[in-house]
Amino acid sequence: ILYDPLSSSDHLNRMRDPLDSALVLIFPGPRSFTGEDIVELHCHGSRAVTSGVLKALSSLDSVRPADPGEFTQRAYGNGKLGLVEVEALADLIVADTSLQRKQALQQFDGRLSRLYLGWRKELIKGLAHAEAVIDFGDDEALGEEDSSFDSSENDGGMSVWADVRPRISSLREAMDRHLEDASRGELLRDGLRIAIVGRPNAGKSSLLNLLAGRDAAIVSSTPGTTRDVVEVVLDLDGVRCSLLDTAGVREEIEDGVDEIEIEGMKRARLAAQEAHLIVGVVDCSDQKRGLEAVQELIRADGHSDSARSSPHNNLLYVLNKRDLFEGEMEPCGVDSETFAISCTTNQGVDIFLA
Image 1: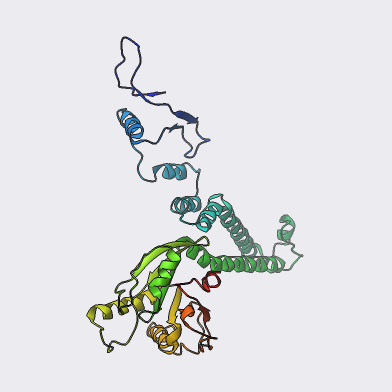
Image 2: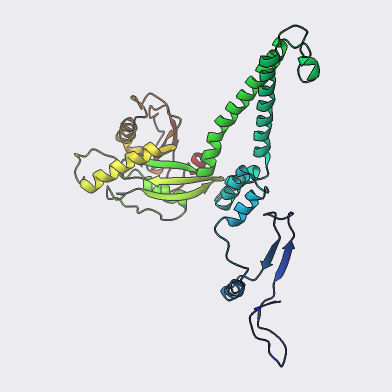
């Protein structure tokens, strides 16, 4: 039982005012998270209990609320965590998806620190032998004193150089592979930005609502309903994705286009520029104009001078309203991946999300 240390005792029952029936755990240093002596109070989570316990603790002269990140700072200062583990802990705390959680835990368990430490040792060893060859290149005993390197007599240390260079080259290749993989890890940690673009009434907002599982954007038959960028964050198969529903792109000289819609189209182009993936939504019944609108937007963003003939790794097309199109669909003449779906009947959606 936890009691308020400053509450007065009742002279009849000799009982102080109880705060909670809690579990108290003691972690003696240095075998604790911070390396210091730690006491954990596992209380019930009601507001009355937590406020009462915090008020009682704050009344003690030797106790104060921890600053944000102070426990992690103390763990780092006492050598319990390295910088890589601290970064992993921060990623773990804000993880939204299962893949983000797994990546943070893999980094938190120290394997990345061990990898970097191995690289450091290899660099130091290579540097030491390189300096030894420079200073004592004619020393015949150099190779005999270091079992890691074979040095023949009177070779001027060339056998040591011959061994150091391939090991350093191999280390550099390993670092290059690690840096190439780091971009994928960064996308996994920060998430993907997916811009949904196309002409008005192509079904962009319907696709966003379908993926979000709720009415996140207004759907109307009136062209130009979406004026600003509507962002929805989703967990798609363990990957954090920010879906951006953008204003429909069309010619500024078309009827009904006003200044607000023009500004919305500018923001749509900007969203496409900053996106990792562009989803061009095209009405099946008006493929020509729909494809031209997406391709014009891509050319304006500088993706390609010839968007129709050149494939893009970050572009795919969704031919919407498949349920309204009778018969077989003709090839749309683009090299990018294409999916025919219906946001109304969910036809082809499973294939699109696979």
